[in-house]
Length: 524
Image (cartoon, rainbow, N blue to C red; front, side):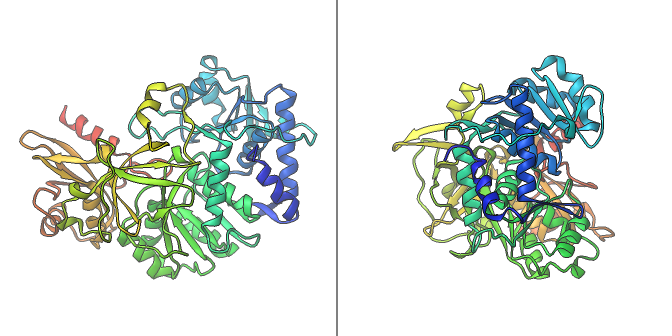
């Protein structure tokens, strides 16, 4: 394997007349799509942009993202995907750090690029969906031609996404052609019968994020299916697309599935065309998973991974059976361990998941570390971060995920929580996910997040932010008493605050640092 885009070229040869991309009622065939990527690659070559040069894509899920992504790879460049919700200050760091010379973005977002342009190496700005000062319209940027694919080494960087910045300054993650090709191929093969030419995939996970990029977009294009691009998440719109287009595959983060089941008309949705639903990005509450499956008679399979692992490392395979509450077994070619602070491997339990309310999690849990062809080359320009991120052991290079978990004797893995989210109260460890799982079981709770807040006596104490179901007859004290009835006294939230919504990243992860900031602001 050389260039990742060669896998798409193979699909074009096999299924040229099939629809590659669906978008708002129109479809683009694989042959048309390949011609468009060629025109984009020719435009880069015309401007002497190629081997290893960075091209930033600052777009929502629209066809030009898919075209620019594969056109950049075709020209030998490196894609730098950026969250279209970011403003000037946020993209300024990404552009300056990556050294991107081209930015492809919406016309409405061009002013943000122009605001920071002098602080970066950006030479060309390409506008999608209209004209903007300082930018060339997308169609005018393209050049006629069908350039050959520029060959790259397996270890050359193909895409440089940035960590979400939920806990600190975003870091550039160097993902190679081998990383991404192996993981997209794996994502395809994990589905029964693989992704087929007659499959239709809901493309609502943002493409700037590795989950949407690899598991949804690239895996679909590798299999000859149709990728239905959806620019932003709206539960009603997504369900309508599934129903109208009879989509067969859907991937989402837990918040999306929770949104669907909490719609007023949720029981009337017809999702019978779906043959598989996948969930990742963070752990899905068991109650949300069960409710979704009960309503729509389709199994929801949980996977696990990170930006740094391209992303999949574990999957609850429908072929090998699944264990609810587990992230599954490692995918072929990937190894994982649960280790303590000395990097000694912890013994597995007999069978999971355990009853966390009656188990000393500290006795069985450690950090999950992984090794495999999907693990990143390293963080861009951050040698100290790379030193902390990896450990060499037994002839392998292990990546520290920062996630706490355990495994059982059947090699199913279970994530307890992010190490940085653990709450230490009065000397006891509290894992927020355990409390959140309980909250989701309450009929009046639509969404919830648990954080640690300062406490003079205990150091930290537990606080729950709860989004109540509309018109629910419940008070914060009622939620607190419910938790106290079902959890050890030290685990129950001593404070419960009702909120209209939780702060989330575009990929659905709760931004717990923002909840903590609220507490700090209130204390001042």
